[in-house]
Length: 214
Image 1: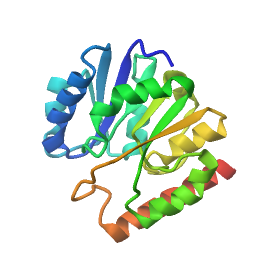
Image 2: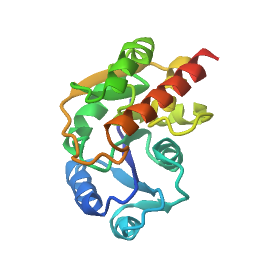
Image 3: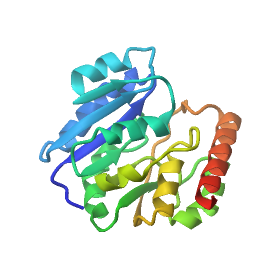
């Protein structure tokens, strides 16, 4: 994978408290490498987009459609050959981006998997779809993509928290690599409480399995 430049894509929904520091940290981390930062805002109501517009290279405001569609929208706007996707809440350490880009040289997509999966639904996803794809963390969106892979992503499911992207990649025969990292969980995940989150992830898993098998 040629790291002549890196496009970093994140999606936001009411991330006013994080977005400034996230962009500044990415800038500092990639200061010796050509890069751009793309923020796709999912109709935030707390002023996230206004902050991002002052600091990011591209800020796109769009109707609220979820993380998966937002990431793909941003990736389609990327100008560099390497695309990194990252969550806006600092569960994914921006400081690891250069290491991920280096490790991704031998594959089409690299997934940075959490060493510890916090939810039972994610553990089940790891034991099922994860075994098929060859990664531990199906729903980690801390990933590195070759830009050429993006044209293959024709989304059919609903909100799969990025699972559909990696499912399609596997089905299309792209080489998927994996590295592990320790994440720091936010106190109040946007996905909801334990029961709601598990139900949403279970449904996303079902959708991804259906997409892979059909």
